Image 1 (tube, rainbow, N blue to C red):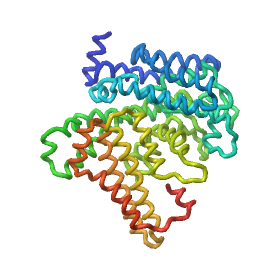
Image 2 (image 1 turned 90 degrees about the horizontal axis):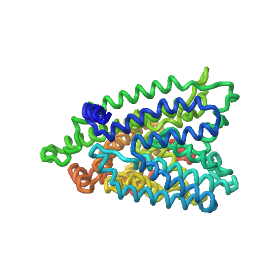
Image 3 (image 1 turned 90 degrees about the vertical axis):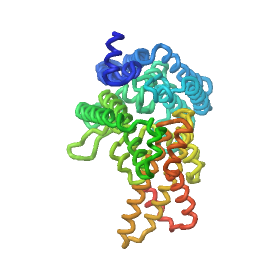
Length: 465
């Protein structure tokens, strides 16, 4: 069996560890389908937990489940013994353990060299454990003054241990997400809420959406395998790269970012198929006639939305969607004091938390600081666009295009840091194009203090942003 795995891995140009992970990852699809056949909620929780632990063992080894147990037990213990502070306790302890694992395993280097470990799955699990504890903490608060997301997700009753383990490890969904809420998991398992068969008398069929996600995954992997040999990361430190002109280097940075994204599109398409097939991805019905099922909870990326984003502000809504939603609900919104408006501080802090969550590599930190600058700069262009009079559509369209081009340039410039990770390579690649993707957003932010367009009506601004 070992020789067969080695020959198969060599044939497609990956390591045995990555091949083992991919096989287990694809196995989440039939495992999720079989969940539908389990007869009762307690049995479903047990199946979810055991299947997730087994897939982890087969993919990463026995030690992976020991790592997963640490934040899971810390989170549950905090909910049992310190409910009024369990959210912040779990946040600090779980993130602390994740950071320790990042430092110990230096997973980014392993991923760059074709290896893999359980740290990526631990990242997803950390978010699930934290959100569960915070929502149980929110269960103590009165509904008055709570945001809609808090009202929807808060937990009045402590989940049982088997419910908690099922939620954390459900059918291998912790491998690469998407992140979902404990309240949704419980309703799905028990057939309540939108999963109640009595609601509208309809039962959504997942098969068409699952096939679409699988076809998308196949296309993404094929394109990635075609592009990656043509745009190797090693080129950034190759002397020939330094001989190229400015525009060719900028173009290579764009293609490097574009190529790398298809790997993530593939991974998230597989997880989308798995979550749709299980039924957990269902989020309700469209208003069309006849109504069609929506599977938004399973969706982690909108490929066209990323590649053709008209504004940097749109990117968190279309890239790693469920993690972006988590960051908004559990970091960004909770940093805003009642009656106050979120500003650059909340944006930068949220991006910093995201960077630390990914790992302590300089490339991650720089990328997410860049992201905060990129979004702030894009908002400046948007405000100018909104200030253009209605009878000057040509000027408004020019500003729309400028925002699109700005997003395209700064995004692909910035994401080189996310890919190469090291400080030396990140600064070398940025410096090779004269730090244009850093200077441009800072210049726009400074310019916004000189050119101050009148603010549009609040309702209109909120609708557009």
